[in-house]
Length: 282
Image (cartoon, rainbow, N blue to C red):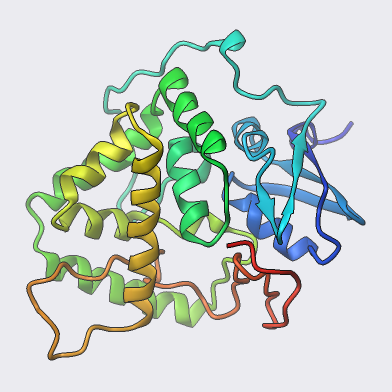
């Protein structure tokens, strides 16, 4: 009997001839943990560990990858739809996860996942973004995500920014030592340190509302994507000593404060060895 994960699969068609399995792994890892990727020409089957990840993947139908419009369908998983309304999950705060634990991609608001995609160079129509917002309104923000996010917000209100910076620097050293890669694991891209720094910034209340309020607009998703993108640039280019010290500290994009060197670049489809595998999507 096959593993349960094999049932949480989607079929991706219309792929560019230059799209590789590594690119597919990175693209769909934003949805959640991947069990396997089987590619044959311009078609691929992507299986996920959790059904919720496959449902998020189905929302990407009509998106762009390596300059080609892709179709994402499934015979195993039903896409979020108004005909299958589930009770909105309670927003009551459950016991927080242990210190340093990052929330899984599957537990994030779907509009937040779309913002991460946009920040990393992928392109989607406003219709797809609107579907992610509608899904958040219909299914609510998971209590698991809120149990992770709310304690961070509380901590930020009392923690000094230097503490956040020191924690990010320490984790960066750990990441460098272990040589972590984001090639097939986008879950670490937007972690606790990003949220802490973002909430500490001048737009902290807006960030908080984005991740806890289901009433969003397409513009809100694009704005969060821009914040993530700018934080990536800031992390890659340290602020000179002569710069304005009153500006909020750079917002790390992952537990290491920046993407690892061997992570593929979504907007160009670069493989781990740095060689181009596709065309620009943004």
